[in-house]
Each structure stands twice: as C-alpha cells, then as structure tokens.
Image (cartoon, rainbow over all chains, first blue to last red; front, side):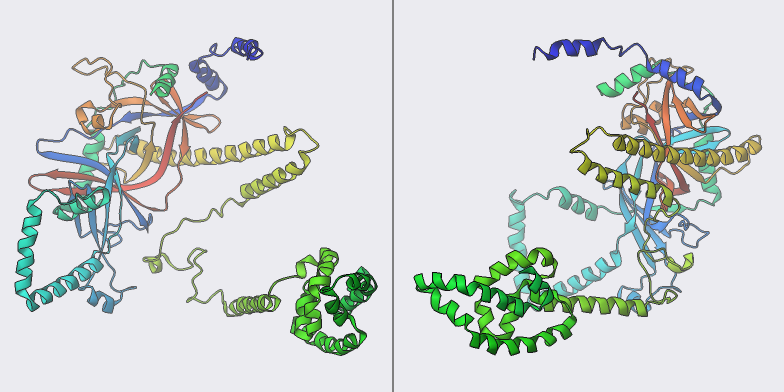
Length: 259
Length: 355
C-alpha cells in the first residue's frame, strides 16, 4: 500500500477543477458559434375548472402505421372511446372495413363483429413533452401519461363467456335443488375472513373487470372543437416572459449526481 | 501404411494391416490363451480369399450410394459388417490402429449414420431446390415476411407492422463489419505484440466517425424539419386565425431540470421547485411556465439546447413507424371528451452533458 500513496498524491496534483463547465461551454461556443436560435418555453396545461379533470396523453398504436391515423380522413375514426378511471385504462372501438379482408362467416360466429377494439392501460410519464412550434416559439407541453393500445379480442371473450353461461344455465336447469344447497354453503364461507386475497395481476384484473366503462366522446383532430382545444393549449399561457435560473451548469450537474 | 490406404479401397488396406500384424501378433498369441484363437481365425488366408470377393462386390454398391468415399474410411469396421463377420470382429483390435493413423487425414468423413445424414442432405437439397423452382418472385400469393410488402398500403391494412430494415445506409454497416474483422485479426497477434495496438484505436476512431456522421445527418434532418415549420409559422405569425399544427415533436428532457425562479409572478415565490415531482406537473399552478431556454443551431450544423444556464445535447430519437396520437382527455360531470389533437412526427432527446 505504501507504494501507491505517493502516486495517488501525484495524480491529485493534476489540475481537475481549474476549468468549470461554463468555461468549456464558452470555449465551445467560440469555436462553433450559434447561427440562429428558437426560444423554448414550458407551456403547461391551463388550469382546469372545478369538477373537471384534464389530462394530456399520448396514445401509441404499435399495430398501426403512422401513415394511416385513426381519423375521419381514413374513415376509421373511433366510434366509441371508453375510460376506466381507477384502472387507468382506455379502449377505442375502430370501425372495420367490411369490404376488405373481412370474413363474414367468422363475424357471424362472433356476434356480427364490425369493429375492432383496441385497449391498454395508461402509464404515467415524466420528462416527456409534446413540442409544437407556434408563433416562433418551441412550446413544450408536459405529457401526463401514455398508453399502448392493442387489439383486445373482446369478441372472442364474449363468445366464450356466452358459452359458459349457457352451460351453467343448463346445469342449473338440470338440478336446481343441489345448486341451492351449494349457495348456502358459499354464503357461510364468504362470511368468514378466510378467503384468500388476490394479489398483483389477479387483483388488477379483478379491479379492471369490476369497474364500469365511462364513455368518452371522441373528437376528431380535424374538427373545430379540437382546433379550439389546440389554440387554448398553445396560446393561453403568456410565454413571452423569461423564467430565470440562477443555477450554474456546475451546480446542475452536482445536483444530478447527488440525486 | 498411408500409401495403400489412399490408393486402394478400405477393405484391402484393412487386410494389409492385418497381414503385417500376423507375424508380430502370433508369437504374443502363443503366450496368451484367450485371444489367440480369435486372431488366428481371422487371419487365415482362406478366409481372406473368401472375404476378398465379397468386399469387391460391396465396393460398387457403396460407390453408387452416393460416391461418398468417406463412408468406408473412418469406420472401416462398419463397412465390414455389411460384408462379412470377419471384419466386424476385427476392428476392436485393428480398427484402433486404423483410426489412429488414417483418420487424421480424413477426419471429416466419419459419421455415425452416413446414410441417414446423406439422405437428409439430399432431401433438404431437393426441398430447397423445389422451393427455388416454385418461387416465382412475382407470385402474389407468396409473401416473404422478411421483406417489405410489395402491396399497396390499402391492401396491407391488417398486415402486421414491423420495423423497417435500415437499407438506406449500407455503407456504415460495411465499415463496422470491417472493423470487427480487425478485432479478430488482433487476437492471434496479441501474443507477440502489446495489446494496446493501433487496430483497436483505429476501430474506436472509425466507430466515432460513423457515429459522428449519423449525428450530423440527424441534426441536418431536424434543422430542416424545424426550419420548415418555422418558415411556415413566421409567414402566418400575424394571422391569429391560422390553423395550429397537427404535427408534434415528442421531446424527452431530463426528469430533473435546472431549478427556475418565477420572476414576474404576482406572488413572488423563492425558487419554486416546479420540476421536482410528477405530482407538481399535474397541478397546473405549480408547473413551470415561460421561456426556459433556447434551441440553438450552430454554424457547424450541430443543435444544442440551453436550458437555464446549462447547455444540453440534442439528438434525434429513433423514428417510430407506428401511429402515435396526442389526446387531451377532459372529464367533467356533464360530458367527458377525448380530443384528438394530432400525431407525433419526430422524437427529440435532450441530454445533459457530463464533461
């Protein structure tokens, strides 16, 4: 160990903190000057009114090409959109083109399916912003959450459930007395606190299944209402003022490392 | 030993070796009891003669089977089994000698089930040939899942979406491949030369070059995009009625931004840590608002963003081919609505630099 001590001291003598990040930044700017710049402004959602909840979300459709959005233009605007608050889930019902790649026989077996249901849970996001260049300012609107929507195949589940229900009914019809007895036993069991609790995924599924869908009215991007919302979103804030940061680059990087 | 093996077919070579061993083996056999009858029985000339024609018959059969010479070589014993019993008992004694001497030059030929493998190969070949014959590149029924669809966009509505292969820039890929070869060539040399050789440095430099080129092209693309947006916007700036853009850029900033102070707020708050938690984001009154920095376009084409006093790097994120909608959900007691506002076009990643 004694051998290494002097060496370490020598290394420490090499100047480390003589140059601040600011100095480097200045030097870089001299070397590669800034030609033009665009102001960047934080543009949070305007305050929502009482009894109102406004969220700014990103919906991702991994199964849909970016060139073919779900809107009026492509004749695939969502017919229904549904939301579950507690489970943070959203569902869209997309009309299907029944003239193409459409199997009418299959559709019959699935109770005349003419829509595709896409759904997925929301995930909170942090550090993501939607940027719009508006009136010469790059306006950044913080995103609250994002969701990836994939086909839910609810029509297949519905068919399965229907078959199950039919079987159950048939069983009940065959021996109604027995089922009554079982019911009594069940009530006794449920009264005790011995029932196992559902954990993790099962609990979430149960919660999801028990929650009712809340209908959302889908407003297409091309409609006047959406334009109004965009306008309010972008121009309600006074972004001309500059918020000051007294934090130096060195202090910032120190803060990042300490965090 | 080796000369007859190469020139003459295996059975003969086998007999050859047996013949040479007889003088040496017989004296030993005289001393030993159990092994003697076996060896003697094998090596009598009568039996050899009896074998010889059989083996000769076997040869052409093998040749017609597929012309794989190796079949008889490595496992002479097995070849012999098909012909006579004599050879089949032999290999334990003499077969070792064969394999030890003969195999080094012909190792690849030995296989436990040559017929089976040969048959497999033939089949696969046939199948692949058959496919090649059937495969008509213009056959619309045939869809090559590894390639892009040749169909019109409308036809592929329900087709799976998959990531495009980066066919636009084959050159950098080639470069990278070359570099990898460099690394391989380096390892054997490392015995003689110091490991800190130049090939590694070269490779790193090349990688940096490739990366730099990519960054430059990304920046050029972003600049073009923003310039296009900006010009369009400047022209209309006075016109309040101008429709807002439906194309958005997704920005990813560090979760922890430099701290800002609200300057012109009525309530003069000291250092509001507005970016600290996501909870703060949800409450609009606490959210950071106003001009926080500048997107700067350098002479060299580089793009940086100055947030507060901190200069950050700007990079173009991977382009997503799938649809990304920006939606504002407004829920209240009377009616709940989801406003589709537009789509994400590009992604920009802003990273603080650590010097």
